[in-house]
Length: 197
Image (cartoon, rainbow, N blue to C red; front, side, top):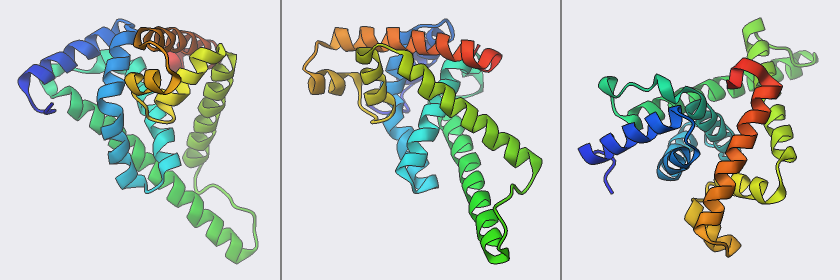
């Protein structure tokens, strides 16, 4: 299916409107449709699969939280998603480069690494706090929900692939994904407050 058809554009816009209303099934469809493409884009920028997968998770959390900010009058859904992914990947690349430069300078000077600026340190602290909150929230989920979320968001599998791999009905995987996403979102809101509201 082409990403550029008017029918697909209209369907994507409707899916994002549904995501903005809290529809986990619509969110899962957006993820299934675009996660592999966005992961490929971020891999080209970051040249590191672990970094790209981590950023992909951040992008889809941002999609879940900010879908209401998508305006179909200003562009296609895919363009909006790709812009989010590219922006986050470039931010991560700059942070990684900055850490490496600081570490190299410190090694040359015999000093421990230091942040280049307060904003860099603040950004890293926020990122670490979010990552820890996601790990802790995932750990609170029932095993079957955690498994499908990890397979989808970390391993990049579609719901159909998860159903085949786990030898479970697709409906069961979709239900566990929806329930897991809802519980994860609630746990993150309680841990991080308005950042995940």
